[in-house]
Length: 186
Image: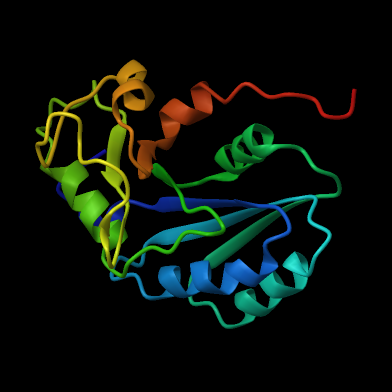
């Protein structure tokens, strides 16, 4: 990856969803307003019984970015839905934007700029995580050491980071290490 050519990075935004059709236009609006435009949106419909498919079809008609749909006929569970989205992703990075999330217009730019700011010898880094905020401030606590940025190993991510956050991760690592799944059909 050439870290100096920002516009060459494709980002795959994953949205697993289950019976949340009414939230998807809000997710789409956040993506549509992004200042960074080189991304694809992958929606994984986890066996929804609501109007999810029609909502996605209507959003696709007015979208200026690529929308991919994985449509499961029955409920697979979040891990399997995430894995299916990871397999379909073409981006160098994967970012989750759940069906009840909203990305601010500069979110992709900020995440990518943070990634680019890591020194070129960054093969040990898997990505960037960011705390979520609303108009009332950060959800949960700031980073555990009260700094704006930290280096954290994977094992510490959930043990020490006790705030709502998003993950922006190199897709090559995720494709090699899919999430463990549970079979609901047994």
